[in-house]
Length: 214
Image (cartoon, rainbow, N blue to C red; front, side, top):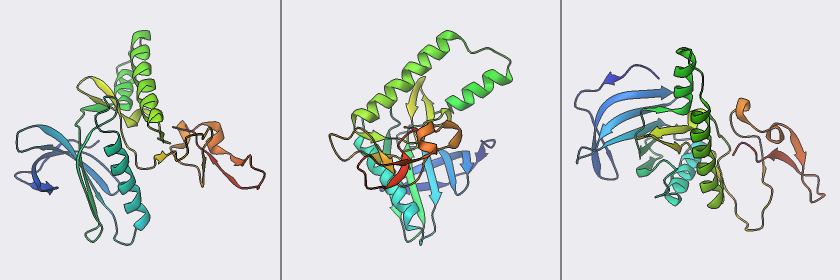
């Protein structure tokens, strides 16, 4: 992420609540993440995404993320969503989330840069936290489809799963395999079956990317 950028006395209103913007803590493409203060002085993360009004698919993806995070409210291993607004006419999506100082990718990068070995205890603790997060969403019949270190945020010492933009709900109770219209996720972290075309088991010849990576 870029170095923090002071923003003065800027304020952003989401769902009728004004948040004081402290600094920009990350950016990528059309999105920015800000560290903000609530009226009662609690630190939150504000994710602001610019979406062209005509990009209905992108707006739908963010609406899906908001819906899934609301369904997962109160789950300790999932980042919490406090407020959200989708403003199609303005081409803006705003999400107020739990704030974390770093993610698992950042932690691993610092260990590498410092020349420190990853201890067995570090692996055990963080792997257990990741499995617990995945078990939580699977228990809620949600497939994330983009599991990677950068999508595990450290919030007050706890690892939490974030970024549900391309996640999917599993509609049927008896589903044992998920097919997607196209592969989703980050190639370096996708499962082999998600990277190759598969033929559906129903004999109709319909293919689709496997539901791996989440």
